Amino acid sequence: GQQVMQIPQYQHVQEGEDFTTYCNSSTTLSNIQWYKQRPGGHPVFLIQLVKSGEVKKQKRLTFQFGEAKKNSSLHITATQTTDVGTYFCAGRVNSGGSNYKLTFGKGTLLTVNP
Amino acid sequence: GAVVSQHPSRVICKSGTSVKIECRSLDFQATTMFWYRQFPKQSLMLMATSNEGSKATYEQGVEKDKFLINHASLTLSTLTVTSAHPEDSSFYICSARTWTGGPHEQFFGPGTRLTVL
Image 1 (cartoon, one colour):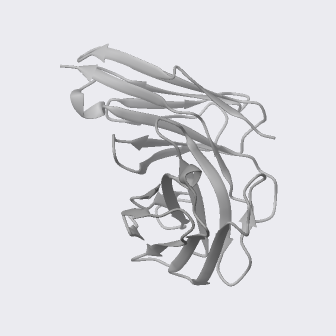
Image 2 (tube, each protein chain N blue to C red; image 1 turned 90 degrees about the vertical axis):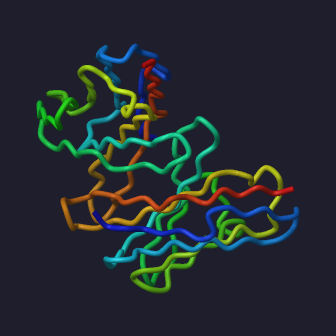
Image 3 (cartoon, rainbow over the protein chains, first blue to last red; image 1 turned 45 degrees about the vertical axis):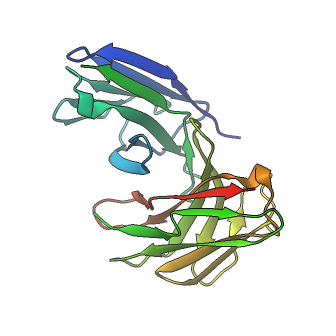
């Protein structure tokens, strides 16, 4: 079945440093979504990427979708303590019909030292 | 964004009892709801996809007789953990799909932490 690998599993940074998490799918994706889950909270949708090579920015966050639509990355510039949480990628395979199942990566837990 | 609620937020029960968890979309109609299970510091594992008015589609390895799902209306889906055992202790999260704000976006409920003694 489809697998979505995400690395690193953990990342600890000093406040102000950059952070990147990577996702890689075993199959071509129709789209990929990114979620953030704060400690003790639930996943919150951040963004969706659909097009090959797509790059989207949200303030200090930059999301990329690979040319082959099998990998993606999330980069945070100049991390802040409010960025703490687990970042999940979730990929959807276009299996036709109304199948909207997402396969989540294992997530990257980001901790930031003030 | 769209709001999804879950009730209860926490439940502690004795082994052998059944527990019902409700998932509601508060300000939109959700034709599809998803039930996930998340172990501590783990990813979300999709258990089943629930479509309003039809039987849920379970993922491989998820016992449909153990985890009963009902999606009776466009705003409510329930997950019942039958004859719960300690290994069923977990964080159960539902999500609902809506077209509002963009295609394929899923809004997650706050989750239900189940502890089976």
